[in-house]
Structures are given as C-alpha cells and as structure tokens.
Length: 99
Image (cartoon, rainbow, N blue to C red; front, side, top):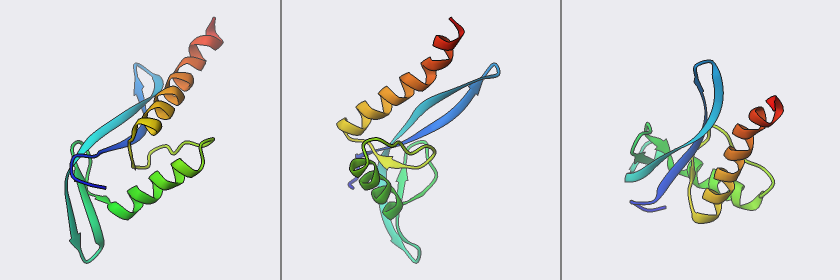
C-alpha cells in the first residue's frame, strides 16, 4: 500500500426508491502511524485502518468466488474487473426479472 493507490468500497445506494450497487473510489493521500496502528486517509472516505484494508484485499485475492460489500480494499486491475462485473450483474438482475 502506497500513497496514490486506490481504495474501493462497494456500496448499496438508493435512488427514487430503487436500490443499486456502486463502487466508491478514493486515492490514498497519506499513511500515518498512531497509537491505533497504521491509518490511511483517502479521498471521499473517513480515515481507515491500513491493516484492515490490506487484509480485505488479500482475502478478495485469495477467494475469487466471493465479494466484500461495505468493506474497504485496494483496487488493482483484477479486482476492479471483478467488482465491476459483480455490480453490473447485481444491478441488472432486477431489470431482467421485470422483462
């Protein structure tokens, strides 16, 4: 994890009463050390626990059949493709069911 890397979180949102999933992203601006351990500051997010972000990323890389929702992870090219595909499928299932 370094400054400039991108952190992602899959969020469930609602618009006009319709729920949908979206990927929130933020670039890492700083990594600091304090009494609680390593902390990461990224655009659009509160301060995050760096160890948790790295553990979540490792978990996602080691379990390709599963996705984490509402948990921060580092976005790389492989994870970005997986997440975007998952979001497309889960946002599209309602439309398919209605037709």
